Image (cartoon, rainbow, N blue to C red; front, side, top):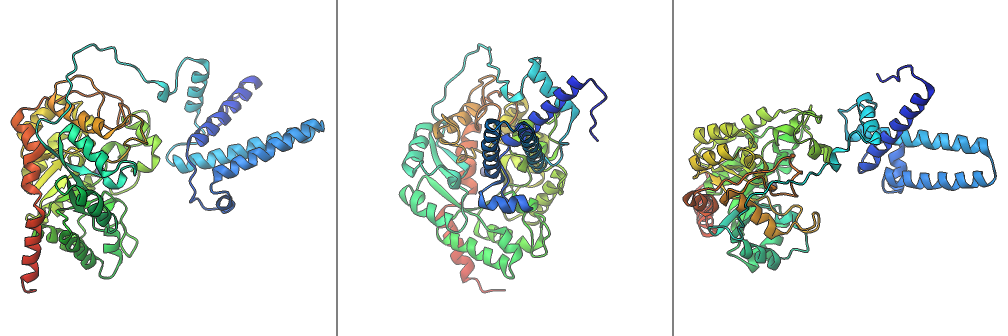
Length: 484
Ligand SMILES: [Zn+2]
C-alpha cells in the first residue's frame, strides 16, 4: 500500500504533482485499448476509443474553464479543475493497469525516478542513445558469398508499397536467390502465389500455414487442415509454417490452450512427412519475455513498448513449451522440423546443440536472433561450424521494412545478416530496427569459413525443401495408395 510519509506541505504538493504527471505520461504514452469493458468503453465505442473520449472531455473542460474564468466564477473554476484532475488520474490509472498488469500504479521508487529526471540528475532510458566512439575497420559486404535462400520471410507483413519488382530488386542487389514466404493461410497463399510466385517462379518458395484454431475447434477440423495442406501442396506449397500461437494461445473447443504436442494434431505432422514438406515451427518466445519486466530484464524496453508480448505469469513456461515441441519432433522422425529463431534458445546454444544431437530430423533457422548470436561470437562461430549441416539462413524479413522504420530498406535487412555471417566486424548494430529493439548491445561478425557459408546459405535449404515437382509426385503417390 502506498502512503505519503509525513512531510512538510510543500513536499506533499510536489509529490502529488509528480504522481499525477507520472500517471498521465504513462497513460498518454500508451495506446488505448479499445476492447475494455465497462461504461467508459461503451461510451468509447461512440468516440472510437477511450483516448478520443478523454480528448473530447478535455476540450469541454478547457472551454468550460475559459468561460468560468471570463465570468470570474472562481469557486466553480476551482471545482472544475479539481474534477478534471481527478478524471485524468482515474483514466491514467485505468490505462496503466491494463497495459502493465504486473506493475504497481503507485510506486514510490518510480516517483523518485521522476524527481531525478526533473532535477536533471538522471534521464529517461529512451533518451539514452549513446554514439559509439570505437574506431575500427569495418568491412562492407554488398552481396552474399553464395546465392542465398532466405527460409524465413513474411510477405504478409510486407508493406504494400513493396511490390514483387521492388523486393526482387533488393534480392538481386544483396545476392539473395530465393525467399521462402511463410504467409500461407487460405487467401494469402493464393494471393502471393498469383503475384510474387507467378511473376518470379524461381525466386519465391511458398509454405502453407494450417489454421490450428480451426483444427482444434471444429468437428472435423484436423481433417480439414490436412486437406488444406494437400490443396496448397497441389498449388505449389513446399513446406509448412506453424506460428507461436500454437501452445501459447490456440484454444480447443473446450476453451483450453492446446499443447504443441496435442495428439489430435498428429495427422498434420504425419502428412508433412508423407509429402516430404519440412515444418518450420515457431514455439515459445525469447526467455526474457517470461520474466518480469523490471530493471533486471535485458529486453525491458522491448517488453514495455509491446506489453502484450510479455509471458510473465502466464503458463505454460518456456521449458514446458520446448518440451512439448520435443515430443512432436520425437514422435514424427519421418518429418523434418525447423525450429524458428534458433528454436527460441538463441541465448543458450548448448541447449540447441543438445536437441540437434538428439533429433536428426531437427534443424534451426537464425531469423531475428542475430542480436543474440552476435554477442557470443566465439560460441556462435563454434556452433555454426559444428552444426553447419543443420542451420538455415533466414532474416524474418517483411516486418518493419520501409514505412515503419525510415531507412530500413530490404537491401539493408539482407546486408546486415550477410555482414554478420561473413565479416569479423566488431561492435556493429544488429539487424532489425536498429540497435536497441532487442536489447542494448551491439554485435560481432562471425567470419564463417566458405564451406560453412555455402551450406547455411544454400545447400541445407536445397536439401530439405523439396521441389514443387517432388511434392506433387508424393501427393499423387499418396492419392493412388488405397486407404488403410
Ligand atoms: Zn517470423
